[in-house]
Image 1: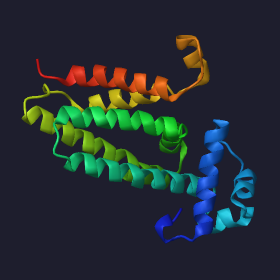
Image 2: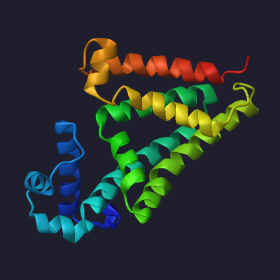
Image 3: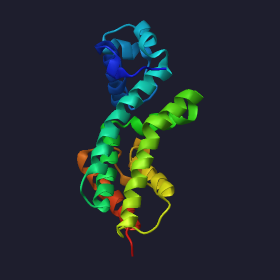
Image 4: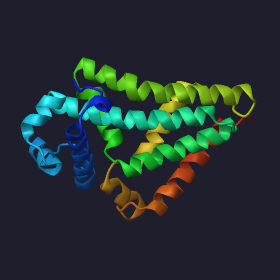
Length: 206
């Protein structure tokens, strides 16, 4: 199992960043350890040394992304703004994160489904649960302030994840629906606005 990379040397960080960059460039999760090591300027043995195995490296990638997401969520929850605005910012931020790191949702789902029980539980604890709890807090605040109607926050969370991730599911689906499989900032911004309008509009008290 991967250790906390805040205490790891620069070599381990280079391996993680090499894996990230290759997954983004190739649009694949199944990038070889040899290719990752070559990109990082290290040897294959160091992946085993720092991370144990491929699963450990993937967990380290998710942990780094989780630390970044947690910082954003903490600042959002503490902000003196309306729950409606918080939810809009959260949805936009999530879609932008998937655009910047298109491997993220697929890697999360793969680890939750296929990783060892220990690894799957760690992904749930470090990434999934904090996001769910933040959404619950925003929704509860919105209901208490009369901005949102009473809803099942857990089911809303499933809807948010599905809506935010679907644009990035495959080039083929974008080509079929949009007539163009490419992604750019304009499309992502329009998608974020559309999803936010649909989700937040459905939460508003009537």
